Amino acid sequence: MSRYDDIINLPHHVSKTRKPMPMINRAAQFAPFAALTGHDEAIAETARQTAPRRILSSDEQEILSKRLAYAIDHIGERPNFTFTYFIPDIQKEGGRYVSTSGILRAYDDFEKKIALEDGTVILVETIVSISGDMLD
Image 1 (cartoon, rainbow, N blue to C red):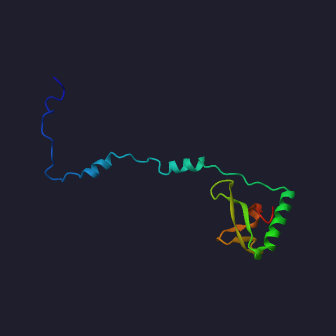
Image 2 (tube, helix red, strand yellow):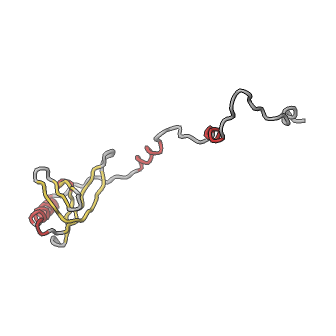
Image 3 (cartoon, rainbow, N blue to C red):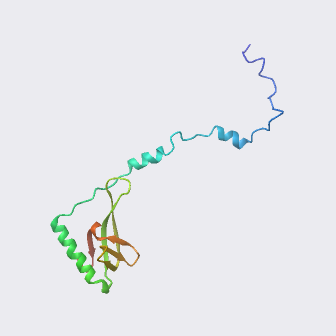
């Protein structure tokens, strides 16, 4: 004889005063939950890699300065250039390097920015290389 033989065949109890809980709510009681909210995002952010900002040598700075001056002088000719520049990361040390190609539209000497025809605006101080058919 088992310990539960006296109750095993009894009918299931149904309350006379309360409505039965909908199945969707019953299932939600047993659904998994995140005890540490944001923990997965924090781990992903920690694992995300950034590149350190490279310091250009004086020779590289001189070449870059000449290429930029040439590009600015020839804005009216609508040449196509490729700019590689550094975007600092907002949350971590370092950042990432981006290359974008386009036609140089304007140079703002006051804010030290260049604008491409596609709307991209690049700070001159972040540029690490400039290339293009007219420069090579």
